[in-house]
Structure formats: structure tokens, C-alpha cells
Image (cartoon, rainbow, N blue to C red; front, side, top):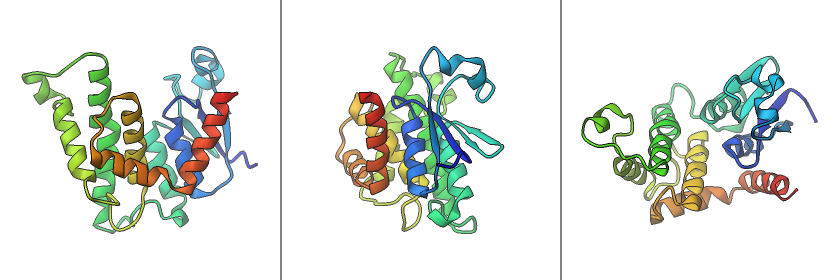
Length: 206
């Protein structure tokens, strides 16, 4: 297996989304498993990601961290996979919009709520997500009755949003709205998603 693409990950992390994207592009890659509190905070890995968090991707001499950035990078690095609208397409705007809405406002809303924090008053004006309810309602409107978020084909934005929805529904971070269940379930059945899930589940079992 080629060492040109290396995914630094853990099966209980956002690395699951990055692995799914790697399975979609169909290029050889190596997954390097890191453990919380030990190898993830070791000097070797901190030289790759000073945050000591996964996932991270090495592609030759290029290092990319942050799961949404990894997805966007790989979609552009391997255009033959068709996972991003053409840069000149009007769909490119929606692609960026929902990929990064999920990665920032939506995830922040879910995490802060999980910590027992709720924005009120001026906090809602300052916070990029406004409030948890606003972010959830916005995401529901984006996916309701739609197969794809950007154009007429599957993209890295659909993958990222479906991954976030799957995580949120399984942990209780999102309400079990039908639109969320439909969108996440449809894309989670893709062959690449199934392969990625099986690989990470096997690591967990071990």
C-alpha cells in the first residue's frame, strides 16, 4: 500500500469522516492509528499536528488537519472522483456553504449544548451559530427533501453533513427529525461509507 497518503486517526474520532472520503476517492492510503493521551500527544505526532488531535492527513509533503479541510483538500486533489463541483459552477457556493456550516456553526452548537451551555441574549449575536435551535432548524431546511446539497451529484459536502448527522443522531446531539434520518441513512449506505465503517469498527473491536 502506498505511503503517499497517510491518515492519522482513531476509530472513535472525526477521522471516520476522513476515512470515508478516502474510500470514496479510491486511492491507496495508509491509516496510522493513534491513541488518546499517549501517541496522540507524543512528540512525533505533535510535529504533524501541534493540537495533538486527529484526524490529520499527509499527502506527500503536504499536511492537512481539520476534518472538513481534509475533505475539501482531497476532493480537489483527486478531481476524478467527482466529489466537488467545478470551481466555475454555481453549485460551488452551496458546496462551500454547507461543508463549512456543518464543520463550524453546527458542530459548535452541538458541542456547547453537550457541555450544558446555551447562548442567550447578546451571546447569540456574538456566536457564529446563534443558538442551538437556530442551527438545527437551518440544517433541517438544508437537507429536507433533498438528495444532494450542491448540484445534482454527491459531493464532499454531502459526505461531511451525513457524517455529522449520523454522529448527532447516534449520540443524542441532534433531535431525531425525519429529514436528518433520511439524509444520513441514504448516504451512509454508499459502498465507500460501508467500507470505511467496517474498517473503523474492526479497529474498535480489536
